[in-house]
Length: 162
Image (cartoon, rainbow, N blue to C red; front, side):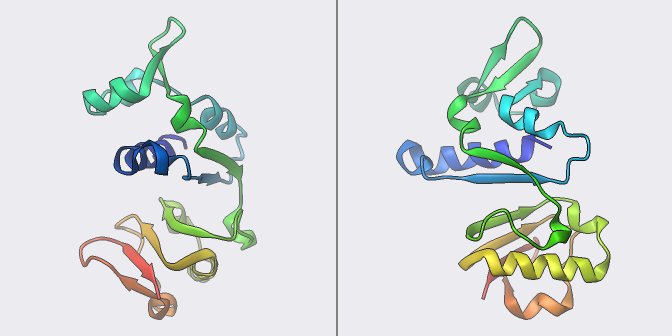
């Protein structure tokens, strides 16, 4: 947990510019039985070996050396846009009630089919009109919810709320 919400925040910062980016709020969620992800998200510190694939200009712009180690910290303006929530999707209670975009990485694969359907219905309820649901390629949209989403692109799992 950790790099994906920050990656999204950096992409949005690059595309939106400073003024619009100030309105971005990213809720990063995980069931987190280890109770470590809040610190990871709050601190935004990662070993260089996890960051070395980041394009050099982005790395220089958004990361600074942390202490004297080989760790780097994500810029505060990025960190403050991301808030961590310990959350179990199976409660079917969202952490917020209004989203423009929901990115769901890996988690649905670990759920029973019926639970997957119920979680996607919860996503539908909290997405804004024409909101976007993006999932990994391996996570297929169950047939029970295909009528409430429209695929945006044929070769990816990105859907628009209808």
